[in-house]
Amino acid sequence: MRSAIWQPPTLRQDNAEDGDRRATWLELFYDLVFVATISQLSHYLSEHLSWAGVLGFGLFFVPIWWCWVGATFYATRFDADGVFDRLFAFVEMVIVAAMAVHVHHGLGGGDVGFALCYAAFRGLLVLQYQIAGYYNPTTKGLVSRYSLGFGLSVLLWLGSVFVPTPWRYLLWMAGLLIDLGTPLTAGRLVVQVPPSFTHVPERVGLFTIIVLGEAVVGVVRGLGNLDWTLAAEMTAVLGLAIAFCLWWLYFDSVDGSPLRSMR
Image (cartoon, rainbow, N blue to C red; front, side, top):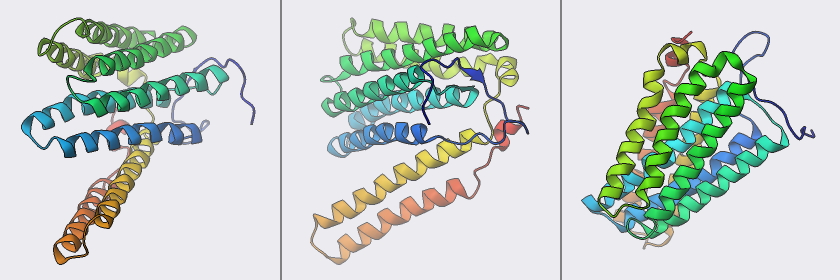
């Protein structure tokens, strides 16, 4: 189906008229670039098995994950499928792919580029919220709160580029605290514009399945590079068991009840 060149974002809510909000094909394709970036990040951790490596993993993982969360919660509130919206998604995918490249170089080698990518992604998200707020006046309270908090975080990340380490990473953490805390301070504004309690669990579930699939591929690939011994077999079984247990823990209890409580 051909999309209009420009389609103003409309507020999407769960009701009988709209039906259940489901993930789109674009959203599934969009998730793949995040999974590829997380896969690259896992390789970084495997090559830096130390406390410094774990710290670096966290400094990279949380911003990447928060980019995905931000885009997902925007998409679950506002519905738009015009050409410009798809181009927005494509640009964000390019930025996330660039994040993966900078993750490969690790802290000290790719942190400046990573910070610029994160600031660019979050800046685009602020722009999307501003556009949505313009066309949906009832959401302006939430949009203003998000734009203020997320915008301040973007400035901190941009400022970190001009600051030497380790102060650069302190600015990263300050920016992340503001990013993570902004939705928590929105209070009633979030209740007035709640996320979809069918769309969000599905998006998280599909993303989790893709990531677990990457874990399975990693186990099989790793086993192929080892001699077929009892120790290798046990390692493979344990690796698959961990993935299976993670699936069980999440999908045996996943539903939209935390989101439904907002209504």
